[in-house]
Image 1 (cartoon, rainbow, N blue to C red):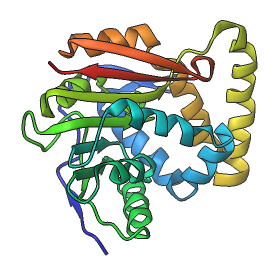
Image 2: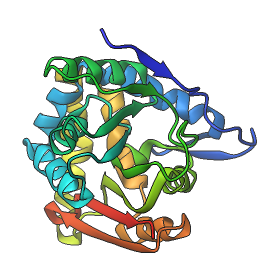
Image 3: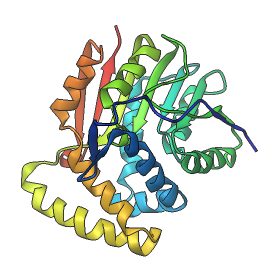
Length: 259
């Protein structure tokens, strides 16, 4: 079985008096990563089943669209951050072929173990690393593309993570962030009902964890809007930034180019 490398996952140091959001709760910055880790340790084994249920399978199409935006090709070097159970990595591996290089990373060991095993089942074994996106263990200007699918909103310091992604991306390379975003206003009431009533209920029945899926619904509401995230890309150094709304803004795919 493939070994999971660990590159230090304690998170960057922060002032103990600083607070951040964990869903709708305000918590010390030093506690957020631990709480997020507990959420994903709890849901790891049922994560893929829940994704299919919650999105009606659409998450698979969204991830394929993100890979199309990435511009990766045979021989590309790719870093999949918060890659978890490996959905995006499997598609990327098909694109880059045996001449390419892909690193599957996540801060949560349980999620990463599931992803490693799923990819092993396909007969492939890319390097796997448990690491913090806010302090990446990779050299400057190394990757042709960095991807994050549904992971950025769980990071304590999003701009710090984006700056790290910028650092490890080569000139001419891209960073792709696929994330839940601000839904089209006429859909808000229906989306709220679905998010705060049905999603926790599905979490209770399927994953046996209602609280974690309530947090996931709350974390979506606390995530920056499409324009706010695009500005965070620019603040992190990206010269060309655009985004694409999917499913009425339920999800947005952001793309940043390092020139």
